[in-house]
Length: 104
Image 1 (cartoon, one colour):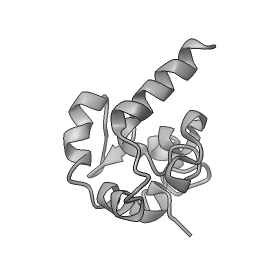
Image 2 (cartoon, rainbow, N blue to C red):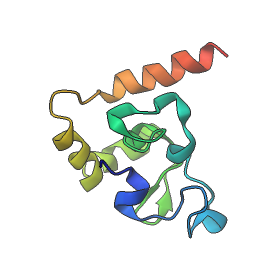
Image 3 (spheres, rainbow, N blue to C red):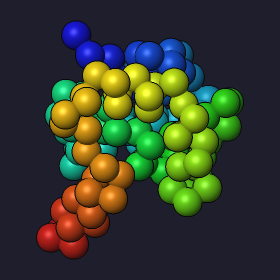
Image 4 (spheres, helix red, strand yellow):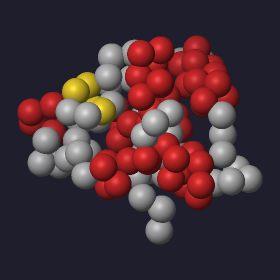
């Protein structure tokens, strides 16, 4: 079974997780517009396009600042390795989020 980022990183920010009260629920764990992307729950396997995720102990505020760190992340590389022929580019994922938001 493919792991979501919170399972791989053991950050505890998923609903009911150990760090939920201190840091809040991770937006990747609740971002339904990317559900099943790369076989994950919500945005659990596309966390690099979601602002408010945690990296190295701090919450990442915006995509432009965080993505450079994400390119070096072991989880990002794991997903790319597990999805060699089906990896969805970040621009496509961001467009999907924006398009879905504009429909509301």
